[in-house]
Amino acid sequence: MPALLITDIGTLVGLHPKTTSVISGKNMADLPVLTNAWILCRNGLIADFGTADCLPSGSFDVCSAKGGYVFPSWCDSHTHAVFAAPREEEFVMKIKGKSYEEITAAGGGILNSAAKLENCPEPELFENAELRIHELIKQGTGALEIKSGYGLTVENELKMLRVIRKLKEVLPIPVKASFLAAHTYPQAYRTNHAGYIDLIIHKMLPEIADEGLADYMDVFCEQGFFSADETELLLEAGAKYGLPPKIHANQFTLSGGVQAGVKHHAISVDHLEVTDEDVVKHLAASTTIATLLPGCSFYLGIPFANARALIDANVAVALASDLNPGSAPSGNMNFVVSLGCIKLKMLPEEAINAATINGAAAMQLSDQTGSISIGKRANFFITKPMPSLAYLPYSFGEALVNLVILNGEVY
Ligand SMILES: N=CN[C@@H](CCC(=O)O)C(=O)O
Ligand SMILES: [Zn+2]
Image 1 (spheres, helix red, strand yellow):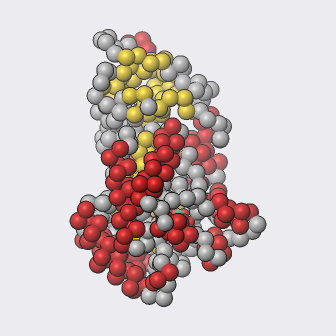
Image 2: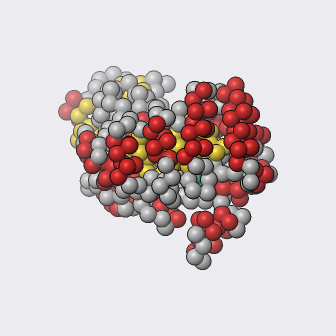
Image 3: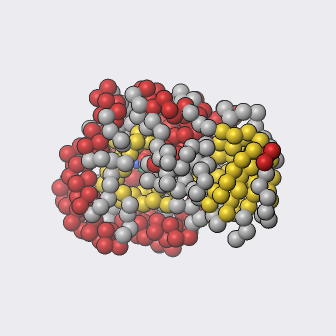
């Protein structure tokens, strides 16, 4: 593969040193940039960058950024991107005034997706997801976490995780898999919670570990789903198989999920639409990342997470899409960054750090992506010319990504 030189970059964004793996608190407002820049990609990696007054010499393919901004690819650390079918029937119920809980009680929700997935052959599930993810890549996403959790039986959880494994093999971006059988109780275990937890711990986990199908252990810790005690039991079981936690916590209530996650050294606790001082205190005293999902709040009409309190307490905040058919049907990270600014009151610099380097950290990928640093994967996107950095989140909904470069090649 020939080296690729990108010239005429208006502003090159996110020049954190390669040693910076995560950014917390007030440091999140610091987003180093270089104007009138170039970047050189070799062997799939960032080989060098600099300013237009000292262009590198040698023979390369050359591509002009035409004055646009170059951003490190979005690192979307929380998605449910493998699903069989959308659920726009629930969308219409929602428009008519039904809540997420009411829709779930009426046969919608996670069990609706599980029924659709049960009837979807594995090759079709894979093709659907692959197409969906290619659309996300065109919108700037360059690293992705994907959860199981619409299987809820041994067979169907394995089906989901094998689809994710195949996606890891064929996609040009790094992908991480989280095992989320503890997403809800399947119908057969509605009144036998202990039985389902037993199935997860003694049947699913050993098989998944045996095939190396998951990177993380996930639990939906929420009233009506999995309690904090059940979450702890599941996290302990996951740890025995070497799966660190990344969990759903405090989406609707103070579920105890944050405290359970922190206690078990979670890489991240995600959602946090509901927080209190104790939650913030626990996160501040830990290295656990707070991953906020404003697309879910926007779509469901639930409160937005208190990003300011978390940042003020020196917590590392990441932003992710939560792409799923029930509570966040968009995986467009440009919109997520806009919501981070508009609804979470994050500065553009904070939101961009949250969706790049901190997203990478929430997937333990910041040694290879999430910033423009020599030696990292050459994964970035070029925008149309913009008047300023803040213009990207400001002009929400505008398609600003002009060109995507992955592994040093035009995508
Ligand atoms: N909260 C739990 N899981 C998903 C929603 C899943 C669904 O409704 O299908 C979420 O992260 O929002
Ligand atoms: Zn989720």
